[in-house]
Amino acid sequence: MKTTTTTRTVTDLIAANEDAPLPLAAIPNYMGINLCAVESLSWTRQEDGQLVDLTIKFIPEDAGKQQETP
Image (cartoon, rainbow, N blue to C red; front, side, top):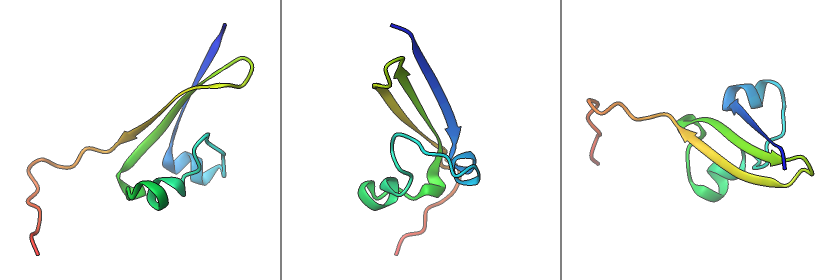
């Protein structure tokens, strides 16, 4: 069965008001992940519309940056 993979940046999804298999609001609301840390979403669907996989790609934190401690 043929599959199609789609990748969209968070900026593209917001600007185009495009739907992804996982609503963007679910990332901060249910996963506790700041959307500023998400680079893109990538998903694969079969010809019949079934979702095969969903990947959230993160923006790596600058390793040289010191984190503040409270």
